[in-house]
Image: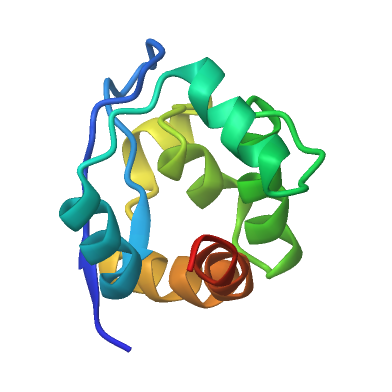
Length: 121
């Protein structure tokens, strides 16, 4: 499965000023074709209507937990979510390969992504 790297501005301030979300081409194309302009309340309502009992603010936790359960290092999760820890090592020396992070992330979130795609199809 091919994928595309997508870099976007986070809605909340972060030390990096951006996050690095990775999604499959299939999900990216769906978003680009529909050009959704969700507001928080509309997204929350859509999630409830689909029968899911998760709050929008919990999606970030679900994403991070899913990555961690799939052996993605916490340092990488912090980078993906736009956080920079205070550790000297992480701030100045830890430079993971972006392609490796992308591969691990896409493998970890594939089940979540498939569930999402089947729910909106």
